[in-house]
Image 1 (tube, rainbow, N blue to C red):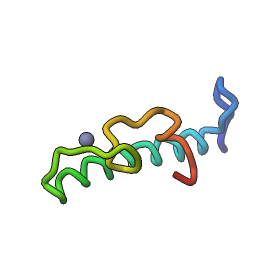
Image 2 (cartoon, rainbow, N blue to C red):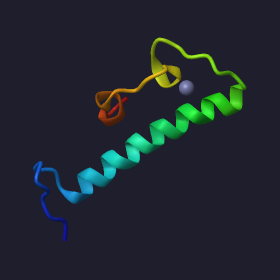
Image 3 (spheres, rainbow, N blue to C red):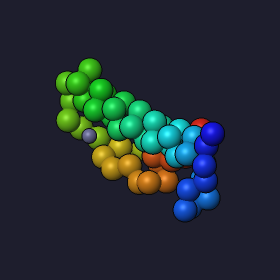
Image 4 (tube, helix red, strand yellow):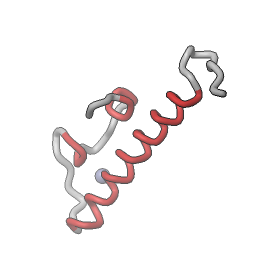
Length: 60
Ligand SMILES: [Zn+2]
């Protein structure tokens, strides 16, 4: 049984947000590894910094 957190999100929702955020950070690092590039873009998975809003937004 999932319980509500202090922020009103269920534990399941928190886990989903965490998984989404980790997946986006992992994808960004994988972009560097696969392309062999350290360059960044202005948007998308290759942008230099991802805000909490970028990490949580669904769909991306
Ligand atoms: Zn980077």
